[in-house]
Image (tube, rainbow, N blue to C red; front, side, top):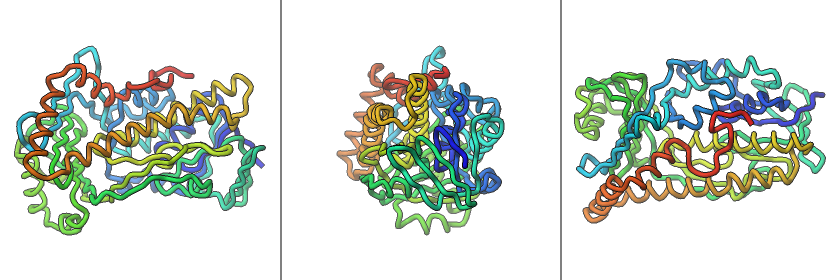
Length: 402
């Protein structure tokens, strides 16, 4: 029978980051995940890319992940936001001393880097592939029986299981949720004109079209949001026809384009848990909240959960408190509850605002974008949000250990 300070259910990007961060602070941690790391790090598992904010990159540096990501990402030096291809776009270019706003990494490279870091972690035990067949949470602690027959005990259980978290449901935590009538088509393209490390977010009624820079040069990831009823037809288009439709939305400013990866799709939804704690339980990442990928903040929100939870637990344990202590969980709830709600509501509002058809809403949107472009205070606020620098930052997000 193994005893741990923290048991994490889910070893995806957020769950494994949490396990590594806790173990690097001397917290004895277990990660239980049904997925086999051999499968999740295979090249065909996930073709998506993620924008990792500069603060999330600082945490990856602090906990030893960054060396394994060397040369794998593309810095985001500029963000261009427009309503269609009309004039009046927002052009975010930070000052030279501000540094990049974030870095684009393929999800597979993030998984491989976390896997390599986790192998060397001294206070981290992983049960993979495995899953809990019974979970007992009480005032005294947490006991789990795994499918392999092992029983493990912990002071705190963390659910990092993704959008359909069974642990969240079993705890009776209500979620506000809805599906958008949109599907995201994801692929990569090669283009004639270099992207100059620019992320483009072009809004159309029907859904945004995002171009995200991959390795410096002439390859970008595409996240193309279309009405769900159109998605099957769009995905079945022959390659040449699909590229012609994509080029209409790009407007030709990247020159000739060609496909550089397989096309895939996933439905888009929103959910937000009414609370992110229960008796000896904390939720992180998509188990707690999931937002539209419109500004690439979903994973960063989860990584902010990680940094805050690590700080709360490590501070508490130094004072002699049990990691599952109700005071510590209340502090985590206060710290993360408001930030995740504000970000979620803002992203949802943005999606709805740009999806209103008609000439007058379009004129109002362009006027709004032009106003932000002219107002340095507002632009600065948006760039701080992109970097993940708004609100009370946990130490890990500044690159410091707790």
